[in-house]
Length: 149
Image 1 (cartoon, rainbow, N blue to C red):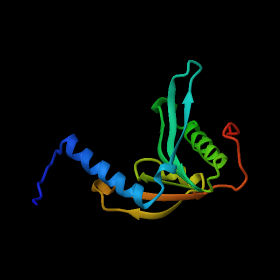
Image 2 (cartoon, rainbow, N blue to C red):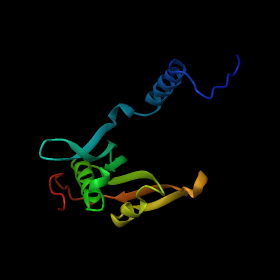
Image 3 (cartoon, rainbow, N blue to C red):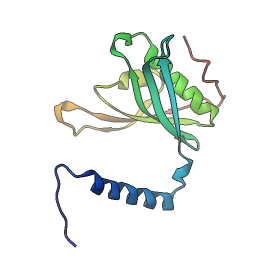
């Protein structure tokens, strides 16, 4: 056996590692139960101008991506998307939400919505900090369409 080093690994090699890890993970945990969650900000023509995308597994949901078109920022739309995402997660029985965000992204928005930083990792260049944040979701199910305006 030998170890080869690659600054730009090829897709076939990456696929072997990814599928091998996937099989190992499937043997260790019921990851087939993980389901996607998403909500989108659309205009009257149905065009997407933002979204909250993640996944759920049992009582946990992970908000993986939050994005609002730059021209529409600072209008509360990101908060509305997070609330909608959490509402949908609650409908599926989720009681805890978590996310990772970088210091130049939206940690202050998430704090204002009740998320708490449980870990900070400050080893990135340019002073960038990675935050792992969690938020307990209300036990009362809330319909995803009952989003604050």
